[in-house]
Image 1 (tube, helix red, strand yellow):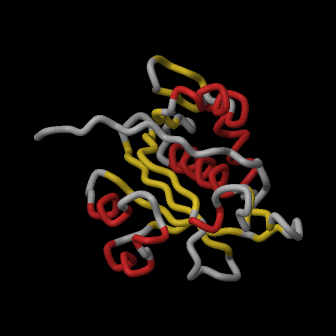
Image 2 (cartoon, rainbow, N blue to C red; image 1 turned 120 degrees about the vertical axis):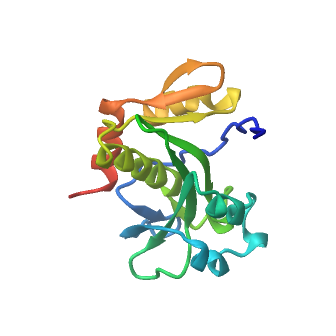
Length: 174
């Protein structure tokens, strides 16, 4: 089976919040992260996303999760695609909804929330929070500073236990 080269990720951590925060009011909204299945495909309009999320959901090696607010679970704030590598979690894709991108975004904290959730999945599976992903070269320093990620080699980065626990405690108070 032919394997595709993993595309480097280019998400921006706009702010580490304790949930997601409205950019104009500062109001914070509690969030939920829920696994997407084939039944949920109708919730994703292709025109609203840069990536082919249907392909990610159909890939049996990956799990796709959506971030919503508790008060409005029908509006997807962001999506993340994760793969269980048996000793760590690999983050293939992460994307904020179109209305949460660029300078006129509605909410801050979406990417941070999704990365923290990926770390939580790693902890829950017994992998001590280890999360790996490939980053665009220009964003390696950004991820080191914002997520406390470690540059491994090439484009590969990882978040180790202490950094993962810091992110998890920021977003998940349980």
